[in-house]
Length: 165
Ligand code: PNS
Image (cartoon, rainbow, N blue to C red; front, top):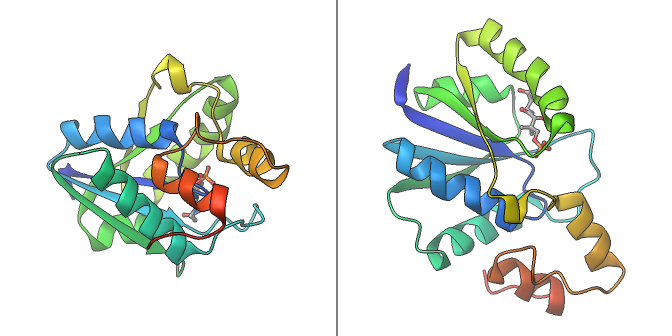
């Protein structure tokens, strides 16, 4: 396992500015970053996984995030199986609140027991601390403006119902 290779996993349904902030900062900390769209069976999906991948690719390019950043998806097994496949030694998660700490801590411990992969938590830019995909889904479903919370590629999709990618 290579501790210079990290995975940023999540549902990304849809990607938010908070996600992009974590990706931007993680990209400066690691040599290679895998942004991994993972199906979460506990959540009803708004966007197909392939669409989330293309939105992340567009958002990362449009934000000018430099470095070796790979966007992929994983639906056939454990997150740690993907990490092992790409030799990643680190998982990176954004932590906005005590709720996130309570949600992420057991997963981090189980993942470390499974394969010794470490989880690194990054604190968000306060500007994005209250943004979540579930709130964005709700605002979009009820016809509100999601522009302040999501990358332009996502705003274009949610405002028009069509995406260029
Ligand atoms: O953005 P989310 O929904 O909070 O991301 C949660 C996610 C998808 C990263 C988590 O559910 C996960 O890792 N799922 C993959 C399946 C797995 O490995 N489960 C065991 C984790 S302890």
